Length: 403
Image 1 (cartoon, rainbow, N blue to C red):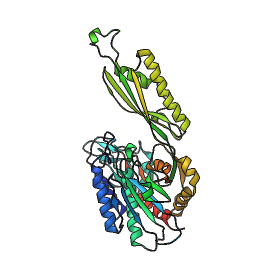
Image 2 (cartoon, rainbow, N blue to C red; image 1 turned 90 degrees about the vertical axis):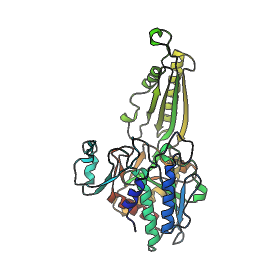
Image 3 (cartoon, one colour; image 1 turned 135 degrees about the vertical axis):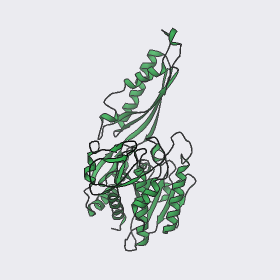
Image 4 (cartoon, helix red, strand yellow; image 1 turned 45 degrees about the vertical axis):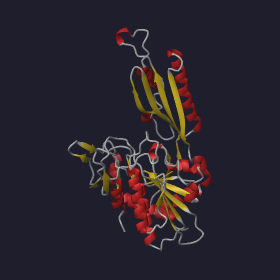
């Protein structure tokens, strides 16, 4: 059987960056390459119903080999975030003995213990790291590799007793669309887990309530030599808008259950400017307060600079899955029992982000999130230990095993 790390390295080298500006599904044509490869590999290992649909979603299942067991789904996403420049993924394996890791000697890029002290916990393991120019893609190709490794193991080992296992790989999770066209009815699982988290001992069934906001500012450009009393500088008004948001409710000042306003993009000139935000809070009422704050700032600036100078368009993205999962806590108990069987002490952690599982839970498929072993997602310092990937496969096996 192929080692989980070999699978991951093969998948990681495929560019599957999603594109928020695209209206297609998948949002980038490169995701089709990974989708078709996964179907090919699933068919080769014996998953007879492996397929990719017209929207780039990959499905398959492994029949039950014992009776009276729930149908369990395992889900991961194929796309990677476009967080740093560069599309040429070049993962490398390090036999980690401790200390800082040189990711790229030519560019003098280092993964430093002073920045990431948790590296000390990985001494003696084999780390897969980036070359310092791209993300690694462990979010979430580690989850894909771990699920695929488990599938191959189940097909080749009849002594592992389990109910029906449903497999799903989604496109475009990183841009919030991963569950949009997921066939929950056709998937037909009683419950599922996304393998899309970090530390292996973390169980995640709470996530942010989320919305996005686009602020558009309409200015009036006048030659600076004769602008007094006449120019309405769009970019400067946009800067005022951002400056009026609560300073300490930004990601760099928050943790745990604390929500935030996060400026993702800004551009503009004298005539036109725009700001793009994501709004997050575990408490739904507090998220509504954040939306209201943005509208109050809009109204204040319009009173100052003229009606319709500032427009704010807010769109809800996803909700906190806790309100669904709390009705199905046996799913969490099952995962935590599996962790304890392999020597992990589970910790329930609120997700400071989103996951396909949040949307799927509200679509009728209760779906908490599990760790894959990766760290430092969405940046060049991303890494994952091979030994942790092996442990993740073992954890998934324990979860699906017949009780």
